[in-house]
Image 1 (cartoon, one colour):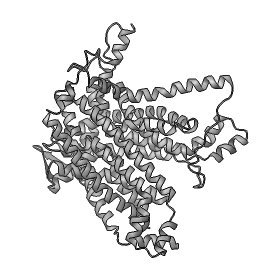
Image 2: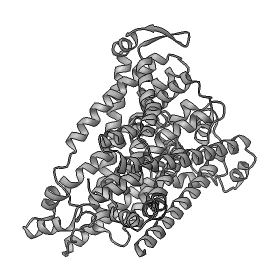
Image 3: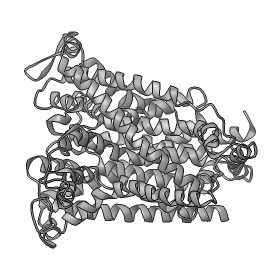
Image 4: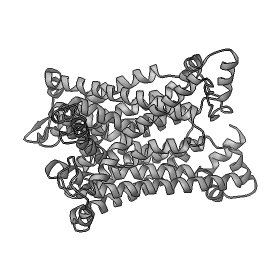
Length: 568
């Protein structure tokens, strides 16, 4: 062990890895073991009995309907992830290689939709694809259709389109990060060797960036598999996926063991597919740390044909942005529409729905609960996440990567599986219904996200700064507060921002944990199913504007923090 490593270990010597093991036992191992164990019991009159049986798994494999739904779920998720990748990777490539001054803006424009409510975006697609929606209205106006068509909404096409839309930012960010790490020196070497742009891409850029694409594809696949809210909203009966069936077993059907067996089979199938994707997406190239982050830029064509191609390429690049922001614009427009029916054409302008927000007590209370859960889970997740990151970076030597992967399991589990596993453990442990369960559930995925972001930053730090502080006589606490934390402050802020957003927007896991006190996403979900009110458009618009302002303020703080750190 080097001298620097010894000092770093001393810096966090008081932090015990036992905290990690306790967390893993409570929120990773126990939920999955209980879910797996529940699948071997029998249900009777809506209760889980103590009779051990394999009938639940037999029922799954003997049911042609369930097997068809398993295959439909996997295929739909795979196609949606593939479609998102076909849009996001070329966009990430263009932004990374051809944009300079506007690169940060282009990236932020892709990421911002992630900060807008999922339900808002899904409902907007229902308005766009409906018989009286934007697409039908446009086609009828242009004379392409004589009357509105029902071929867009409540179809598998609508499900794939919506799931792909949700996944594009995730694939983009993962691909863009990988592309940015391809060093300029390798591209120059390829050009000097006489390779053209296509050969440079296939032999240099693609091998070094495909792992990033594979990670983004896997995340998109996971999101699609675990999402039963979007398919039910835009797919109807034609878009039924296994997640909806599993949810019904833990709801109206009251057959938890059968639902657990279905969830286990789905999780195993997903794990197998992700393992194959991970294997195929492995990068054989190695990027040296000294070269990474060079942000190489491919040369632009100087010929007239090349310039025309560049213009057409720029026009093509604008299409994904129009696709990403179309639902947000629709929601904004309908928040001012003087009609309770969400259809085109618009009837007039009004501020009525914004005024109604202040008199909708149930909605305001749901919003308050959402903020309470998000603030509490983010605060606790930040403290625990930073502590775990320090332990993994400087204290744990053996099996550090295994512990890191184990802590990240809740992030990698489909939302439907995570929700029901936490619900079973909460029920058996006697954890009070309502907000206590929701907060614990949100902590299970908020903390790992924050931890991974901070841990990545910690492992990139130069240990000599901490070593110098300790050599100059500073205590471990002073070194932590005045040297180490300022250096990772931007990562902590960024992780907390992302964790807060994930908590505010979470609906799938929350549906299984909340009781009679719904958070805003659950409240809106119930409203959309049993009686929509246009004031929801208004609250979503306000939340969207607040989220964007929150992101911009956070980025400003991070940039100022980084600037001060560099000056220091």
